[in-house]
Structures are given as C-alpha cells and as structure tokens.
Image (cartoon, rainbow, N blue to C red; front, side, top):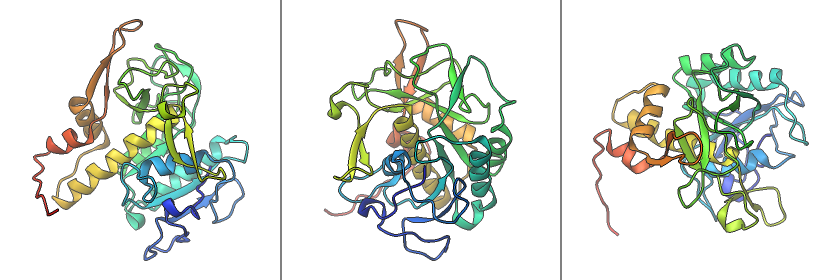
Length: 284
C-alpha cells in the first residue's frame, strides 16, 4: 500500500528514485495511481516497512537498510495482479541500480495445498529469484494447517508463517508442508503487547497488529542482514540457500495438535554464525 515516508522512523523524506539520496525510502512507484509517489493511504505498507527497517523510536530487523516503496493497492487495501506484477518487475528491473536483495509481499488470496506455479504472479516472482532477489510472502491468516495462500505457494518464493512471542504457532497462521519458516506475527489477541508494534498512520504514529503480514517482513529484514554480510565477505547464496540456512539455524516449533510438522522460527544471529562470521566487539 506504499509507505508513509514522512514518518521519522522511516527517514522523514522520499528519495524520488535518486540513487544518491540519503532518504531511507530511496524510491519506488505507485501503480495504483500511476505516478512516482508511493505514499501510503492505508497503513499496511507503513507497518510492514517499519518491521523491516524502522530506525528511530522503534527499530526494525535491519534498521540501516534502505527501502523501495511499491504502492499496488488502493486506500481500502485492494490490489490487482497487474499492479503487483508491475511492482515486482520494477524491483527486478532496478535490482542493480538500488541494490535490491529482497522483496516482501504481505498479501495473498485462495487456499493451496501444493505449489501454484501457474499463478498470475509466478513469472514475476521467478524473474526476481533469477536475479538473486529473495521473495518473502505471507502464507495467510485462515488458520489452516493444510493450505496456504497464493502467491506464497509459488515454488520459488519463500512462504512465511507466524509464530507468537512465546514461540508457538499463531492460531491464525496458515502452514503446510510447503512452509519452512516462521517469524513473529503476534497471537491475534486483544492484548497489543502480544502483537507486533510498528510504524503506522495513526495519530501516535504507531500501531500494534497481528498476522502473517507482520511475520513476513521479519524474514525480509533478516535476509537483508544476511546479504549485507555475504556481500561484505565476497560470498553469495541463492534465495533457496538462504531459506535453508534460516531453516537449519531456526528454533523448531512442532505443530503437535494438527499436522505434526515442524517449522522454524528464524534466528538471525545463528544464521550469520553459520557463515563463519567473525565478530569484533568494540567499546563500549
């Protein structure tokens, strides 16, 4: 839905696609209104952007990351596949220009038990992955343990389910055998402390929300950090390899009551350590 780039935790300015801009939200596009100003008039995009990279009163997973904002949806949160495809393709076509390493999609529809590689968004997602861009996608909030939403079911994508802050599977989260990763998405209760606080369009500038939409940007931020480290150490990994590392180093949560499957809540530190990362501690 775009981003409220005027929010101080999201940089307070818009870079207008200038690669030399110091703004956190360095650029993007509005495919709903067909202009270059992807300003959020809904709130969802601002919330997930803060989870990825807010740096202020709250801090996201990758607080020094810059962001490309794509607005594909209207003020009610409705999005066409054509607009979403255009947004993904913008990232593919500008991957080198803006150093884009991960796309976060907190959207979806339908119920799929197997891969949905004929989905209308699959070709664009495949093109992004071919550029070594990880595409993290929310699995959906229907509480199913046998199906997930599209386009999370596209084979080249990284589907993300939700865990609670107590390391259980969120009751609303879709999961099935296509899913490897979980990340914090809240428990869906009325207690805001149990859900995910991030930047928003409210009068206070913050809001606590739950959903696989909130879990997905946690994984996107983790992948941004991993790619930063890989780049700094002249290493590369494919999106599938990074997903596998996050799976192998994550905290296992077994779905005892339903599927019996085990999913892995991401652990960024352990994922980095698995790449033989050397830490130098500086005072203080």
